[in-house]
Image 1 (cartoon, rainbow, N blue to C red):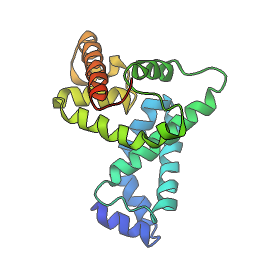
Image 2 (spheres, helix red, strand yellow):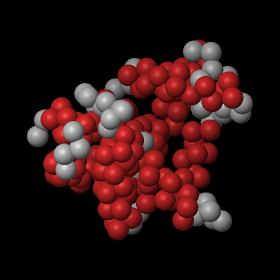
Image 3 (tube, rainbow, N blue to C red):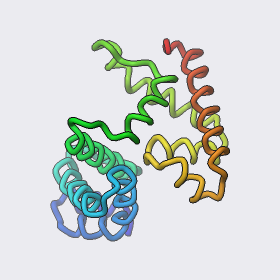
Image 4 (cartoon, helix red, strand yellow):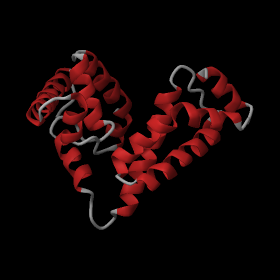
Length: 186
């Protein structure tokens, strides 16, 4: 099914949009959510909530050319929200670990101006990722976007755990250096 047709159905409030989105991207959206929440039922709920969010935001949003990325962002945020709600008193160890890893190389927006620069920072990170090999990009994205564990990345791609850990360390160090050169105080 063509993404443009699905988006058109969303615009026209045709329920086929949800059916076709689920058929085309459902398993991938559940995989993202499951990787974050670790619970199959929660992942299914987040997937369904993603369809509702897409229904409510298309229009005015127009994700032509990046429908999957648009949906992936929604399901990721919904899944993280569920984790935050479920662990208000005790923070998830995986999320804490990832936060600590990235704090080493990302500036913290501690004021309104810093928060406004978040989009520019995201674009700088994207530029940095484009300088990496496909393998390094994949490892970085699986860890910091999909929140996969080091073990699951190693298993998925047939790497040793130490290779994944070293690649991530070098990527973070490279990102820190790149951002400093771009003028971001780290």
